[in-house]
View 1 (cartoon, rainbow, N blue to C red):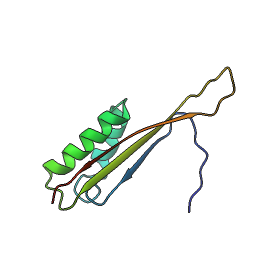
View 2 (cartoon, one colour):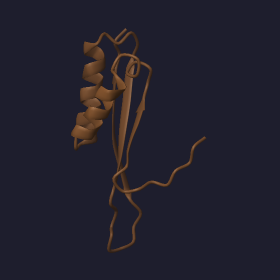
View 3 (cartoon, rainbow, N blue to C red):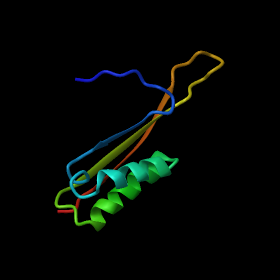
View 4 (cartoon, rainbow, N blue to C red):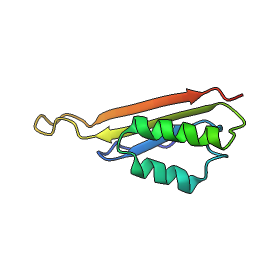
Length: 88
């Protein structure tokens, strides 16, 4: 298990094996870097996996850590989006 402090600006990707073997890591990185909204990144990654003929179901979660209430000392906000495509 890896533990890590959440830092403002972090973005996390959790995905099933329906995405990782069919969409190249470089393409995944490009999508994650280009999409400002996690929902946009999720939908694009699922669409790419489907277009590449994903042999299995595709599940994608993108989580963004955004700044909390700076003036209150609140912890960072964690926002995310998830999507799933049942391809087979």
